[in-house]
Image (tube, rainbow, N blue to C red; front, side, top):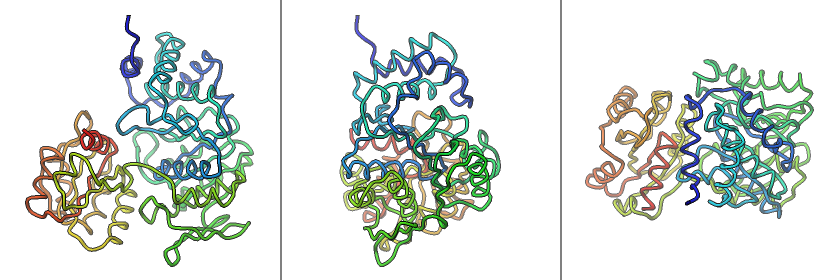
Length: 425
């Protein structure tokens, strides 16, 4: 009999709970206990929450650790092309053989009980990481923090809260303060927390939580500072100043993400090689990623083609700010979004830097906005816009009218994943 593939087991896991998102830790604790509590055997954990910048910050910390000769596990979500992207064991994507084995073990230990897809796959990641040697474990929160399936680490080495803004309000609350309270749920008693730039009401909640738990706070603008000066990144904390290259991840917001990563590396006792590596060697796809070759790029050979998976108002503002720094060139958006997102909040800043938007639906996503709905939102934001049947059709239309265009495919990580798959086909 042929053994099941990881895809087959993942499909089975989707049927274990009727809801994709159902925030509670009860089911996770139950399964982890059945597995022997692997979360207690992980290498030192850096736990990262926040609305924007979690993945980029994690990628920079990992690059810095690697440059210092350290190995790190890393857990992130969602994946773009293959589920395996979510789990790195000692800096390598988990193999199909290992993924299948750990998923199968978790499925058997769960014994048919109700558990969400994210919860059981997070347990599989923790199990794999506990059984593989490494120096550190980097855990990215999936949603929120307090009730997220990753929030099972009693004493992390560090916690990090990147910028908080409105997103997932239906699960986390309808104000920034409420959302910040959920993110601050990862802070643990006596364990340092690094805090990225925050709105005042978010910072107040985070600092109050840290004070209650006796957690030392290292906050942007207080215990550490970071800025760009003459084409360099300047970082300063109480131990001194660092003068480094600008991050290879593009966008002014990446300077602040780099600051959080550098603070983490300082607290972990890393040295100059780690700091340099963090800003020059990080890789994080679909975050203002330039596509230089592939099937889709071949359709527009003279154009610049970029890909970004940001999907909330803060991401739209960051994209707009970055595009303003690029050399002048007509910029076209190919945009697909989920109906759970603040579409107008995302698109409004981009109206200032875009020539035209082509709305598309996201293939295979039940919660996608239709192309017409995205176009309607764009028109309300002052963008010239029209629908397209697909990213391919939009690229061909842009090429026919403006072959030297700058093209940004944006609005969703799920759209970004589709684009990467199609471009590589």
